[in-house]
Amino acid sequence: MSLRNFSRLDEAEVKSVDLHEGIDSTIVILNNRLKANAERPEIQVIKEYGQLPLVECYAGPLNQVFMNILSNAIDAFEEYNQQRTFEEIKTNPNTIHVQTEVTTNQWVTIRIADNGMGMSEAVCSKLFDPFFTTKSVGKGTGLGLSISYQIVVERHKGKLLCRSKIGQGAEFMIQIPLQRIKSSDETPK
Image 1 (cartoon, helix red, strand yellow):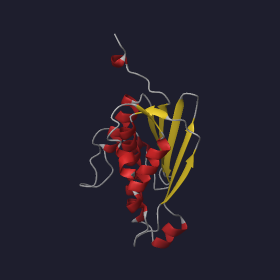
Image 2 (tube, rainbow, N blue to C red; image 1 turned 45 degrees about the vertical axis):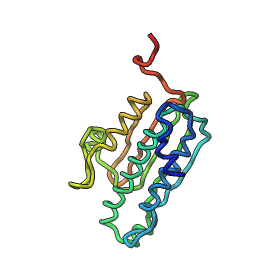
Image 3 (cartoon, rainbow, N blue to C red; image 1 turned 120 degrees about the horizontal axis):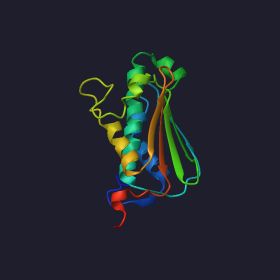
Image 4 (cartoon, rainbow, N blue to C red; image 1 turned 90 degrees about the vertical axis):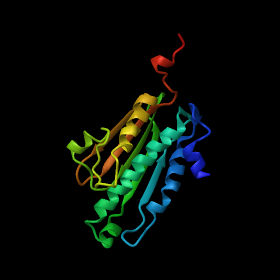
């Protein structure tokens, strides 16, 4: 059920959806990567969901944005944890905080923040560039955030921003309109 909700294969067009359902489905799919293992305790996911109405969007692609950002946070924890002991991680656990809210009458904001090692300003400025990656060879293509940017900015006429500082984690902010803004090539002539 979560995989079906995530993929939205039967919903290629714009549809009014519950964004929380998409975020929850993404988290369920990533559950195996969030569970405790021999190297670290469980990655905690804290959800602070606001009262959201149904949002008019391309649900499948938007769920892919959630997947890319959450997967990158988990990858960043894996790298960060190589420098920490199990006890250090237990004392200061890996945490992903997901917050949603209606910021004005017309926009929804989804914040996904982690308490990982963070990124420099130079890295943040390149995050959405195609083929840019901070991962080692063979671990990443550098396309996930570039594609996410296209989905949010070009398809949904929204904003995708990242705030981060070394040692203070990273926060991605997705802002999309409640009702889809049609592009000029979609308006009837």
